[in-house]
Each structure stands twice: as C-alpha cells, then as structure tokens.
Length: 300
Image (tube, rainbow, N blue to C red; front, side, top):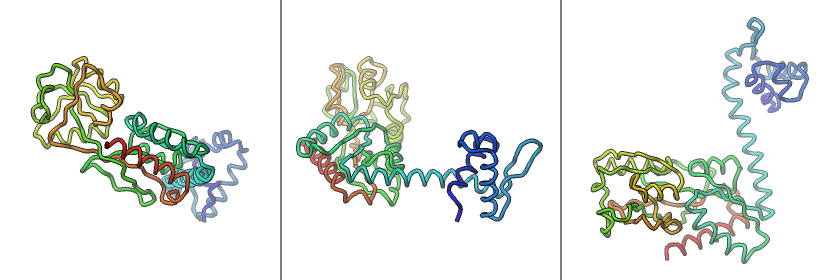
C-alpha cells in the first residue's frame, strides 16, 4: 500500500520541480521531503528520480507514478468532500448546482415552497452549465445537480449518480418582431437555412449544429453567448436569430422578440442528479420533492 502523504509530497516535487521548492510549498524541511521520497521508493521498490546535472529527472517508474498521483490525490479530495457533504445533508444543509434557466424558474418556486414547510432546511445555490455541474457533484462541491441533455447527445451516467427526470423543455426559435416568419404558428428550421444565428451554451450549440445538419444545412453562427438576456437582446437588435428552450421565454420576454414553436420538434430533458448514497437522506428527499412539484407546476 502506498502512503497518501508520501504521494502528495512526491506530486509536489514533480509539480514544483525540486525538493527545495516542494519543501517550501508544503511547509516542510528539505530533509523531511527527501526522507518521504526515499520511503516512497522503498515502498515501490524502484527509484523515482535520477540526478541530471544540478536538477532531478523522473525515472520511468517516477513517470508512471506521476501519471497516477494527480488522479489518486483528486480521488482522495473528492472522497473527503463527499463525506463532508454527507455530514451537511444530515444537518439539513443542501447545495444545489443548476444552470441559469432553471435558477430563474424552477429553483425559486421549489425553494420557496420547501422553506415554507421546512424552515430549518438551508438551501444554497451554485450556478454552472452541464457538464460542469455534474463534475461538481462528483467532486462533492454540491449535493444536487440540475442538468439537461438532448436526444443523441446524452453521455453515459457515472454509476455513482442517480438521475431524477423532472420535465421536457421544447425548443423554440426566437425572431425579431416584424420578421416575415414571426406571423407563422410554427416555423420549420429548414426555412431559416440562410439566416444569421446567435448560438447558446456549448451543449446547446452542439445540439443546434446536429439538428441543422439533419435538415441539410450548416448554420451561419455570427455570435455565441451563454447569457439568455443577451441572447434575446441580440435577436431584438437584428444581429441574428436564435434557438432557445421554451423555459427561457417564461422569464425573459423581450418586447421586440417573438418566440415560435420549431419543426422538427426537439426537446431537452431536464433532470436532477444526486450521489446514490445521498438519495435516502431526508434533506435530499425534501429538495427533490420540491423540485418535482415545481416541474409539475411548470407544465400546467
């Protein structure tokens, strides 16, 4: 078994480039660093460094361990943070990580109703687009992650996560008021093949490129932004048109922008994700129940 403290010291030597710099970074003496590296070499049975002039170079064994050290240390940090998250959840503190359109719609209603019935539950909010939100969940930086996925672009779910589906959100096309197609009840995507486009977040942009390819054209994307308000303002100013989830229209309704259903119909799946072992905890269940209720209300 390799000692994690020695691996941390080894990683610091590799990162900083010398025993002296590693000692300074870790708050150790240089002899203490040297002793830990020598002990790690005894554990592995192989030399990890070789002298080269005034410097040190990794041996083949050292290079192998260096490739794994960052992963090992990252896993240890994630395990520690997940354990800390478990303690917080037992105390009724829940951290939700969500993307902007649900922080402006589902989250306020869900949290308000939750706190009305359970004022001792503390809810904290972080904001991140997927897949970063799921990465934060796996790293123990949040307790519930809200994410979305499109058909054909959904990645395989890590085994330690559980998905709770909340709702499907239909895509719409955003047009400047006065656009010839704004009078249509439904707009076909293929009719907009010559338009200039404003694209959204990377995941939405990937889906948009896919559905355009299926309709036989390559869109002329002249601008891209993750900001939903900026997206609508760019459309209103005539910079381009955009595809946006209908959830966005429920809280951002620019007077100079018209939203119309899009054909072919494309829906994104909005889901909540939790670590499997955190699912039965009362605080988690309360928040998930509130999110389900808010999602059901949004369908009405």
